[in-house]
Image (cartoon, rainbow, N blue to C red; front, side, top):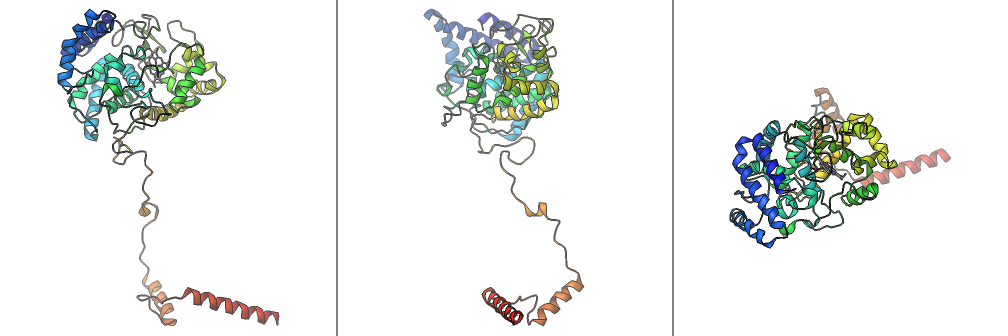
Length: 417
Ligand code: HEM
């Protein structure tokens, strides 16, 4: 993303959220400077210093992206997360930023490597994408705009981690766009240092030489299977690709030239703010030149194993929604460290990811009182053998068995004779 397009995006964002004008302008300015500082000219890098100093001042010595004071937070508070969810819904209403929020969360979690045990080395949903160093990875071009949109919410809620906020925003966006309810859990711990960011190159390419092999290499590394790869790709039912960010897509089409949100780019579907199964229908038909089909999209109908699921999802939206909800939840927790370890849900008080505790009362119909007649009968039976229901007979099981064996032996010998 060039500094020009960063400025353009910020201008668009500013139009959309007037209240955030000051923050966005400031952040974009510093981002542009930062991009310049990445250029080959060493003279330019000094321009970044004032912002860097500001960043250091506000983020207690850490060179994070944020230029505003955001107290460090290690554990999220469920009530604050719920309030943040309401703020995200408001943000969605005014900016239509659903797609970029989904992409932000996926790029935070999609760095996960299941072959590395150590946290946060293993990557995943840990909030590392807030740091410049990771935002600068070429796969993340443009995502700084998503961070800008969420930063005011992060600043408002001191007890919400970035890792949770990214995933909350994405799940809320999918649901708000008409998608399935995602069985999310929260409690993700944030990384604290830019040094904890994963190395570049863990996210998929859109145009590799062998798309099917590439998708399997990348997504199997995260622990997904073919069905899950196809279901996850269905997230491209939302949003657009922009040549000035990823290099893919047309600058604008009849579906994107008027927005909503910042106009332009090429979408996979005609109604790119509606979460449904039209992605599978459209990439199967490939009839409309205004709709995007990346090589990694096309392969879903070419590879025999992917095709089975892509065909099913094109036919059956319910099947897609069911599988998508499950795999989105899985994606959102990749590599995360939770506090408490099992995480918690925002929709009920029980922690998720834990088998429900067995409570006998839930399965029995309740204790019934014996009738008086029955009590008398039992009493009489006890008294007949010299006991009482209040003081049960002491039993000697060994003796009982011996008696039973003796009776059996006696009976057998009688029968034989
Ligand atoms: C299968 C491998 C994938 C590849 C190669 C890929 C590639 C891309 C590319 C090139 C863009 C355009 C970015 C831009 O120019 O702004 C994009 C956008 C997007 N991706 Fe993916 N992606 C993949 C998987 C996923 C997954 C798993 C999700 C979510 C679960 C996802 C969600 C999105 C969304 C919502 C957008 C639209 C963003 C916007 O409109 O700002 N993608 N993707």
